[in-house]
Structures are given as C-alpha cells and as structure tokens.
Image 1 (tube, rainbow, N blue to C red):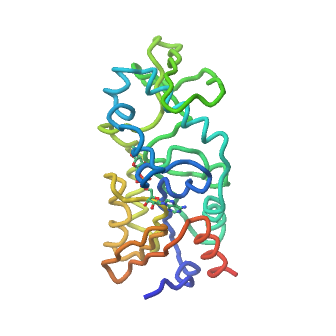
Image 2 (image 1 turned 120 degrees about the vertical axis):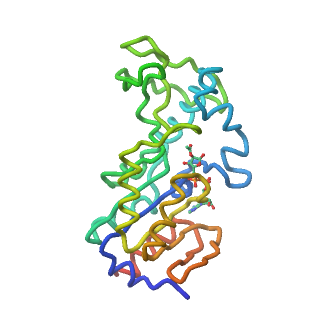
Length: 249
Ligand code: OAD
C-alpha cells in the first residue's frame, strides 16, 4: 500500500523524528552509512564516552570542534526547510531530533527537542556549569587533530561538548516530552535515522503501537511490518518537499 499524502494534510498532531540523514544533504556526515559514516572512521569508545574524555580530553575536544565547525559552515537543506514549513501547515507539530547540529533551528523550526544534546552548548565536565566564554572559530582542524579544551570560569574544570555520550542519560525533560508526543500524535514521520540507538528508537514504535501512522523517509527501504507503517524511499531533501506539495499544493 502506498502512503496517501492526504493523510498528512489531515494530520492533527504530527511528530517529526529526525536523525543524521536529515542533515546528510547539508554535507554533515551520518554515523553508520557505509564509507561516509563517522563510526566507519572513528571509534566511538575513544571519542564519545566520559571515559574517553578523561583519558584524552584534547583528542575528544578537537574532534567535536571539528564537527561543530563543519556545522557552522553548513546550511539547512530542503528537508530542514520543508519540516519548518510543515509546522505552519498542520495544527500541531512536535519536532524531535537525535542530531546535535542546529540546522533545524536555522531553517526556522522552533522548540526542537534535542534528545542527544547540542554541539553548541558546551559545559564543564567537572561542575556541569554552561560554558559562558566565547569559543574561537579557528580554521577547521584536521579530522582527529587534538585541541586543548578551554577551562570553566567557575571551577577551572575542563569544558566538554554539550552532547550526550554513550553511557550517559538523555535530557529527561526532552525525553519525557518526546514520549508524550509519541503517545498523542496521529502521524509520525521518521526521517533519516537507522533507528538503532535506544531509547530514542522507541519513539516511532511507541507511536505506531498507539495507533498513529508511521512513515519512514530514507534512501534505504524499510521493511514495514504493520498496516499503518509506510516507507518512502529516497533522500529526505527530495521526498519531504514533494510530500508537502502533494499534501498542500
Ligand atoms: P545513523 O548514521 O545511524 O543513520 C543515518 C540514516 O540516515 C541511515 O538510515 C541512512 O540510510 C539515512 N540517510 C542517509 N542519507 C540520507 C538522506 N539524504 N535522506 C534521508 N536519510 C538519509 O544516524 P542516526 O540514526 O541519527 O548518537 O544515529 C543515531 C545516533 O547514533 C546519533 O544521534 C548518535 C549516533 O551514535 C549519539 O551521538 C549519542
């Protein structure tokens, strides 16, 4: 069965759940795509855990600065713009992202629930206070180049990126709001995610189980197992603007 775009036009509460694939067409690498995925080239255990930061803070800080600067150079793509436009077309839209970039906000989306934190909100590793200094905008460092982290003005602890690392809890309020939206929405668009990382991956399934329609948008086809589940195959930057045109003219 094909997904009928009129279903989008009739949605009362739309939940859009995004992963790294939504930013791929802006030139931001995903994590698990063959060849181009970050975890193909870098070991998450050496870069994305509190233990890794304790052992080599300059390596970890340098890698996240490289990623932050790549995002600063990037622009939102038609997928981010279509999602911002959708918020103006449906009575209610909740946007939940696993991404740590700010491309949804720069496309015009507001109240984005960032389940995995943000590259743009560094904080102290020791006392958790937000970093209130100015981060330099140096030349894009080489991938994998070390960079000493700045120090906290309160306790002189090392500043760490404001992202969620493996083994850390997700921001509780954002997760609670995301689950609530999953329980209440009538349509969920799951865009550009492999759906492999918990607990975020529960969100689309939770929506499906309470009776919402679930649409996967991804160049990789999704095997749909329930009557209300659909797969739209292609890059989000093409599929989302097309869906918007079909639903709203
Ligand atoms: P993944 O790299 O696991 O998955 C990216 C998905 O995007 C894949 O399913 C691709 O097929 C798809 N994709 C690639 N290009 C696309 C395009 N142009 N349009 C639409 N889809 C496209 O990334 P996530 O699912 O976001 O967590 O990964 C989840 C979490 O794992 C991340 O938030 C990160 C990572 O470890 C943390 O850092 C805590």
